[in-house]
Length: 479
Ligand code: ADP
Image (cartoon, rainbow, N blue to C red):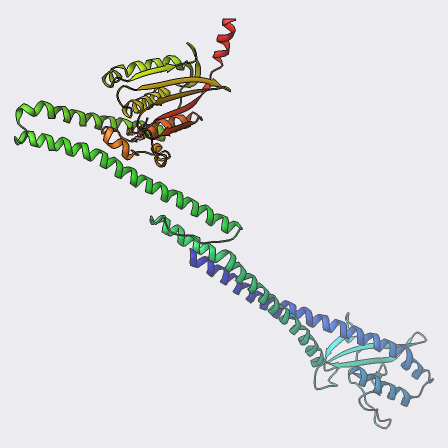
């Protein structure tokens, strides 16, 4: 395709040049010749008529001598580069600018017929065999007292007219060459501006198609080509990032699946070959169970994330009481909290606070945040869950006095599989997916989540939700 496009341009140019020359050589040359012939013959006829009305009439009226007329015609014909005759209706030569007729020797144009020009001013040929070469001849009648007394005939060499036409035609050829040259400039310009960038874009698309998304596409300019190249480059970069993320994601998933599987296998083999004595089996089966729990959790989180992403997250928006849901979530952690002696303190704005959101998904957010808060808190500490209202929004925060998150990690914790170094020791079951799920859900609601954390002091996650109008109805009822 690439080659043919360029060839098509060249072919179009060659055709253009060929038809240009063809047109000039045929139509234009004919038109030019006809134009020259018409113009010259008209001028000659005008001159012949003038002579007929002046010198010739005077000659026939004997007001001027034959000799004078002969001399006048000689100088006139020299000046006009023509041959001028004055002849009688019978064809007898009276005046000839080429050589004065001898009175002794009569010269007669045999077969002379003044109607030879027919509808034109002129006739082309040897003029009744009077010349060897072709002539263009015009005939003007000499009329005196309503009678045709003779004719003024002017001859001009036909070769001379052809020559004039050819020089005019040369100008047309020259113009054509100039036009061809200018269009060649346009072709070169077009090649530079469109064809070369297009080729580079095609080369880039071939690279992208073969999977090399890191290929650099260099097409500058603010025209359509530049815009196309920039869009294509942007697309490739996005895909490259996407591809890198994908690879990273798979590497992380594989790693997170492999380590519990390796340890499960290790323990089971040890039990089978007797390395672990039967009395210790119960303890190690507990460890194995723990590992399978971790795998289940990981699989569930992955499924949740996948559903959130692929379905573009369909939210079931309803009005519900966030304070009530917070109480339920806190209650579900009672057992775990008791084990670590952690107290969950609820600072809720009243009994009822309606929000408009997807209840199941927000419940999952709360669950993940409280789960993290407990995991990263030390024993005998307190966790605060607070709700406040402000400007049509409901702010929900989960605050702990745990290990905190280092500043440099605070942007990364939202990424899939990210676990800070600090947490690794504390939370062996963590998947690093909890906060990604939280962020996806909050984003899908068009809301925000923020984090304030100090290492060694604690963390506070706060997210917003839309306050429901049902709260206003409540107030009215209360009134
Ligand atoms: P995980 O399942 O590992 O907890 P998350 O995505 O929920 O995954 O959290 C990612 C990382 O963010 C955790 O490994 C931990 O390092 C950090 N983190 C999350 N919440 C807290 C918190 N309340 N206190 C301290 N660190 C936290």
